[in-house]
Length: 137
Image 1 (cartoon, rainbow, N blue to C red):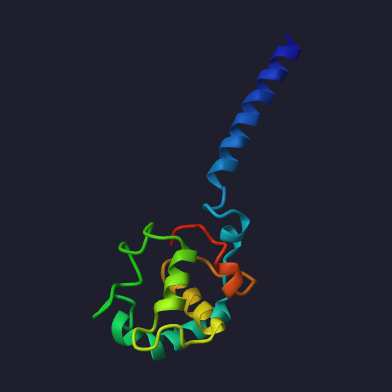
Image 2: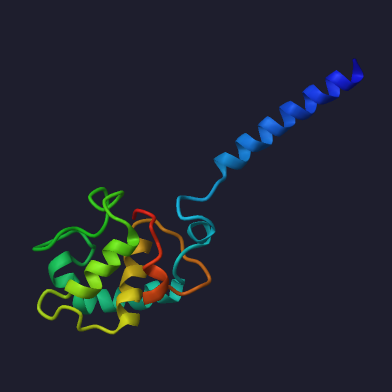
């Protein structure tokens, strides 16, 4: 009888900890998503680059002016972070597509991620690392 009670208690404890682990699981994208894809300094640099190269069309607050909004409901779940980066780095800015340096595009993407609620981490986003991120913004 004692062994049966111990087994039942262990089963309940295992079920409870498994459920708690699922509640605390990182977003889609694994451990990188939990710790962030970019650094805070990178997002700050991205804000400056965004103001110079993007705000005229996408708005100072990423709200959209003559181009789509880059923040909020219209962005969430629409495309993967990699897809957005690829489009941006090949097609933007509108008057000079692909004219910025890869590090500048990565910084702007970091700023867009920050503005859409993604946390900063300890590793900077790069042109290579962003292409592997399948998580939706």
